[in-house]
Image (cartoon, rainbow, N blue to C red):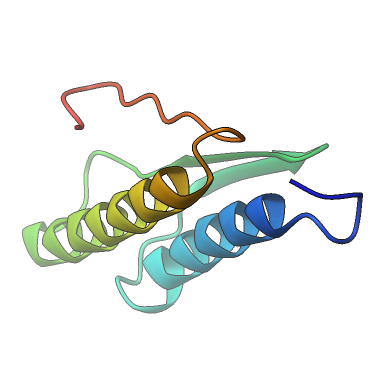
Length: 88
């Protein structure tokens, strides 16, 4: 929503995304597969993880989704969310 370096929407999305990926690693002790390039962040959580770690990862991802919905609510003219695999 602003010039490069002053775009609050991009900054919010970046912080939320990277923080969530880092917390999946730090808090849930899951090493996700990640790829980051030119503003694109890909995070994949392995399917074969202990249930306790999976529950924590899911909680972190739901918190991420809720935060992203708040960004979309405030800045909907600049961001549209699309959920796949049953997300809302």
